[in-house]
Image (cartoon, rainbow, N blue to C red; front, side):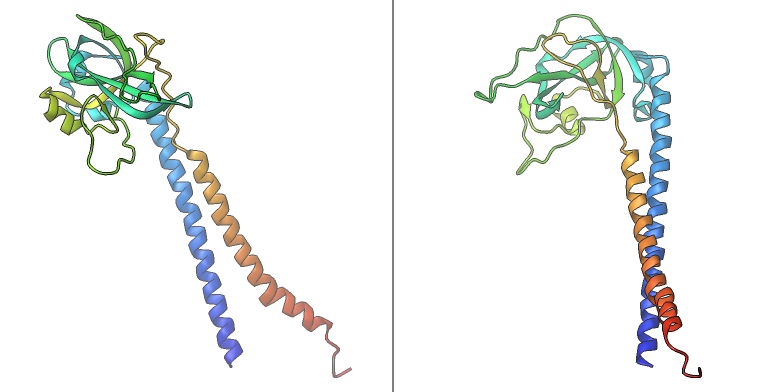
Length: 244
């Protein structure tokens, strides 16, 4: 009686484990499909005709334009330039340089102008970055604000800082900054490199996780099948028949 109860509990537990791991595998496949759809949408945005400053400024929801290309004209608000520390490009650590661009015709957008190296012997020394005066033209793609890094204590302000909160920076500068940024493209210039990495949504890792969950479900089912059905049946078939 006790052995039968244990067997029932074992089979129920194994069934639940198989159901759970299989469900997790299909969930990973759904996540992969969602990211493939997002990647397709991003690629589609990148093939559209570049937006002018007027179109960007008049957009009802600029965030919906993320990854679309732009061609902008305006003047730099050089006094509000920010150097984001501990940022990497081509496996090198330095600064992301951000400067607001006052768009021709009105409005402003924060431009991630590129990457510059830092002086690790004098961490307060700024790299030499040129900010041309007067009207400038640039190309780039619309992006979200820079990702935030871990920052112990209170957020830093000033020219060199670890992170930048766009809403706080808007209040700090008094500029009518949009809810998006622009990642400037082009060859190195003005002391800046612009080898922005391609966006990788990590679809392959979801397929890898799905394979692991399905493999675990298969392993549990195979162990139960072997130890509870095949092996006992094989052992019984080897026992001598007492009626012979």
